[in-house]
Length: 278
Image (cartoon, rainbow, N blue to C red):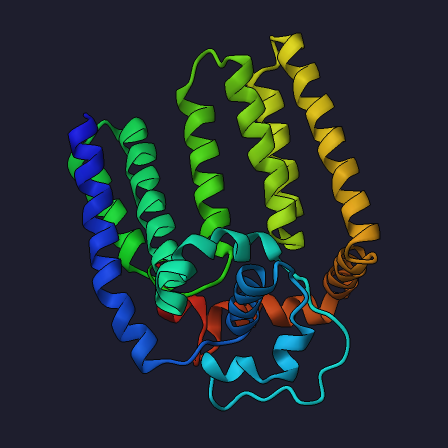
């Protein structure tokens, strides 16, 4: 029912929209949020993603008055896709408009969660309750109000999963779009490489009886990964590769890995077990 879908999406989006001005008024940007906003600002005003000059002018004070990167050297062009996606909202109302963009993605994610659960349970009530718990619980309820790419990645994954499990016979156009989204994840953030590969493999398994679609998936994936490698080498000067190698080295060490896993769940300040037990 399209009316029900629109009602669910607009309801969640409106609640996020009402909370966002309070969040922006009470909290400065945190972590890389300042970087994403500076990149968005640079894209609009200077038509580039190099924020070295923005930092030199202390533009970051607009988003966090206590931050001054006076010793900054070099460039910063990380996760520029999320900054591009925030451009329309930023043009409307700066940081608030960019946050509204994330509200939009959060509302769409909540709707996809509802549709996935409904497909599995055929229960509107169960789907509605699950959607509410996810939309207003941690971490989705928090990430839908702030400026990190995680909510965008979550929306892509949820949409792709819904299409894969619901669609019985996919067309070339549908498969092309899904594999495009899986490649888009890598350009969004290098740490989503694993998600990208898993989505591509899941799609291949789904289409295992259709050799033409499997060939299409493999060809598009190879082209996408080649473009990504070129982009990493000539635009980011292999910065993504170095970060990915760093992550692998960190997680290949047994003791730090075990400490990180335990801390992720049990840390008393921000552990997932305390904030998102479900």
